[in-house]
Image (cartoon, rainbow, N blue to C red; front, top):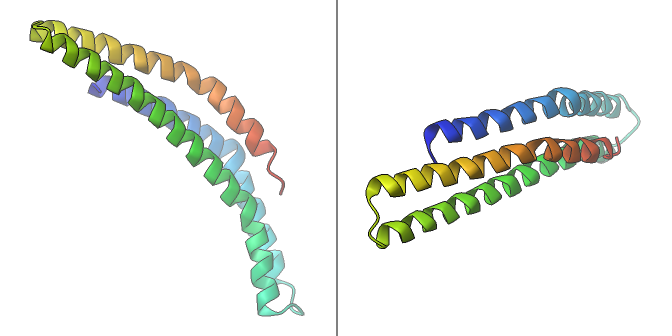
Length: 138
């Protein structure tokens, strides 16, 4: 993928992830630490009970991080499939005897379309992730 197109996708995804982290994940981290501290305050509990309590406190954050990671992997895989399709089209054009400049132009246009399409998916992906994160019980 052309550097400029790759940077465009990376910046858009980074912006989305930073927003999710700031508005959702960070709050979950705060709740997790407070909950874990409360577990440690239970002086009558056994070491095992405190450990289980802390694990329960960590579960929602782990679920949230897994959710975001899975969705980002899915997005990355879809983008990779789109660019692979562009590579196949470019190879077919090159094999048919087209000039390198025509192949390069086709590739740039195709990859640009992939990037446009996938960047336009980010707002709905963000809404879906926010709804899912809001649904994780604390």
